[in-house]
Length: 502
Image 1 (cartoon, rainbow, N blue to C red):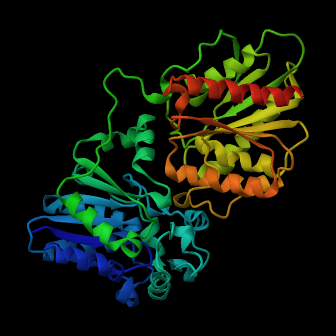
Image 2: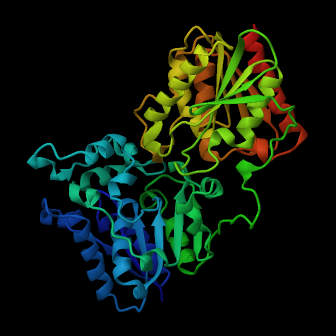
Image 3: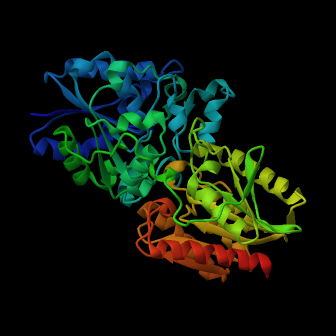
């Protein structure tokens, strides 16, 4: 008989697991939901000294009370922090750690780093403003989306979530996690909720970038599942969640692919077109790919996606895909520009936007560039950076292009109320030409944002040209060396250059 320990996230208590626990017990499992100090019906026990360590102690005590020799311990949202802290103290009692729609905490990092609500995350980064700030109030009934997608949660369950929510002690989110090697080495399962913006495909792509923090995810003892729901699956899909938890306990699930020794990761494979080599000049954080032509030339600035780890080498401006695009436009008479901006995490969009603006200013000031004829081309997670330019296009901006872009922040990013929403900004773009390259096999969570963008563009009659890539994947330029993919790149490039020359 499998024994489960269920630890809920911010503002909630053991009550949130009620239906999941019932389903698990019906299958014959032993289930122990946890109510952490200060949460649920223990809210009266909270105080300024209630911190992460308090909650780790809560989980350890419960593990010690369970008769089963081992438990599958589940952490949702913030709950993964006390789960990992407790697992480090009782590793022999843990059969598997389940991360329920939550990132991977690192040793020494506080839970605040994974809070999706950016405003709260920024507030937690500073000192408490007053003695009353020792706890974080739960969101209003219409504000839960800032803490994760509420997709699929019935209205009565959402009302219950608001009615039973308890303030979260601030120190539980700001005290760093002490993550032991024993806890890090335990078998684990990630359950990803696709409506919240995470999926196995996204994680596989991040692993492919070579982030050393994610290398452990390719261990065969690590498995993954997806649920087609929002961030609160215990309320929106309790039956499906219970079934997946039973499968996880049995060691089932998808295993990520590790790159074979000596194999190039997808983003470092060759560009799909064979381009004549053009002169390339490095200036600070950007490279100019220069045409063999006299006089100031129009320019295309290619803005990479992300987040990309700060330690990633080579950096995006040296990736074959971006170099290929820049060399291609240079071979056709325009200046191609690749750059490195500092989008290293979802909280870095403002800094990355400043980097892009500085790069554009530098490009336009170069005497070899016609500063009145510039296009900006955004890729993947760089898509939100197009919002400023769409919302207020300068006269010299002749075209905005986007390839397999994210065009509205995903719910788990915590950027719902920021300016980085191209799907909103397009309503102010006027007749600015927009060239959108759309891949047929796009990740569903990204495809939703493209659909939102196109609906808004149609409503305001924005000048959008769509270039479709049949059979194309996200990052197709170095993955899909097919005639339709090559044709799509050629069409998109020539369309952008056409707008620069008109």
